[in-house]
Length: 626
Image (cartoon, rainbow, N blue to C red; front, side):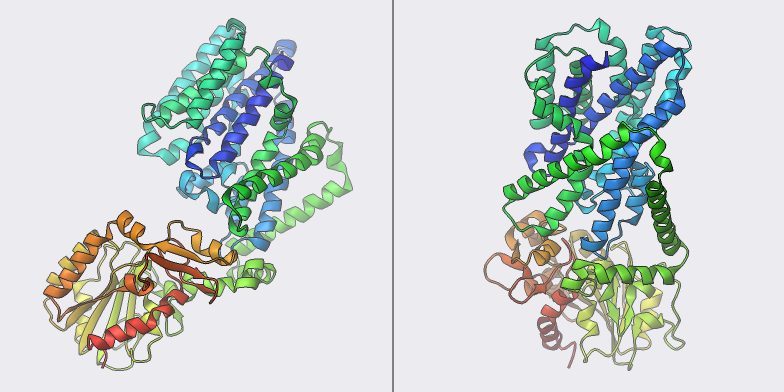
């Protein structure tokens, strides 16, 4: 029976993995390609049920140990090999300020989906930030394999296929219901939590058990495939995304069980692509991640290169890893080579665990060792230029170590009762008190690097709507001639909060310096990609203003300044970062090797230094400095 369904399943796997690959190109036309993973789940449910059911028919029992052995040989060796290669390659060529350790460990343990669920990672917004982000589906699949034989064993006891179908159907209804309930209110739970994905596997199982009652029809096979293609590769505003999900799952199961031979599904090249689909799936995202970071080619060429390299790597790992283990007995476990690799790998993992969670000093030493071998660190001085918190200081103190709202490792200045590490204090003339989140912190170098600025204080709040207590402001005002509250304003909501705060403060010597935001790159990874690829990149100022509706913000913030010109001073940070008369604002300058942004909404230390002259001029023109 398994041979009859082999070709259509392998061809459908080929189509599924190609859909996922195209989805990760970020081409809008393929925005539904992620549904290829749902097809994989249906196939798994169909195939695994077939294996267990046929074994039970011939032996009258489920051999759990044998089942798990086969699953381990099928999944684990290739997963371990590709994940470990990716991790080592990432240490050498990935951004050194980001760690892939947790993602690697969770992927190897088969619980990557729980990692993303715990950290609330949105698959659709962060997938190209994590070369192992796709292993969530392997976690869901492995968790299904663990529980499914036990589910079947509870009902096979009755030896009635109809009872089994009803039982599985009821479980799938429950799983689908919770999937749909959480789809809008908690989409990340609905996406990653394996019990809410169980219904997709069970639909495959139900179609396997019902296939003898389904007519084998070429027309039906072709119709199902056409509908799947239309659902994945057409944009429909009539069919909701969750309903589209359900339809793709249903038509995939129906296609497999109603299959009748046709040219497409019997094509040798497509079947081969299906054979290597597991390897292809594991390789494609790491390849995309590094090609996206390093290759400065035409978009179409980059996709073609990524596909070709993934295909090559997949073919090699399929032949030398997958097939070797799938068809092996377990004698290799006793080989000296395997034992040596296992011991070395175990030592490596233990050292990493120990250094990460139990010995901070050792962790720093190991990190510094890896930095010496990291290409980006050696070539671009990455940690000094890109890592945001390294350059946000007051004097020599990194403010993110001491000045966050929940920081505890600071000392108090006895006279001013302020955090010593967040304070520069030279005299009692005037103090610049900056507060807010990272969007205010990015401008601290403008104050810290000005010799004319004698006194600075900073408090960091993750929520940009939080303002310092009035009692704190009054206390500071008693010790200084003038107090300048410094904050970045990103939108009208923040401006309104600052205006309300302004009216609460009655002391006229307390004044405000406001930054009117910065131009924002279109994509988070644009700045670092431009630096790595050494190409000039720009922001379209007009598009950014329109997208973020900044004209109204600019109007209101300058109106606020005009109405209270003796106490409110607005520095045009947006214009300072985009001084050109045309619409293009620099992100990275190849000629000067100048990295102005670190992501899609933060400037670098270099970016802050670039506008230092304008800010200093502003302070003197407004007679804030004299």
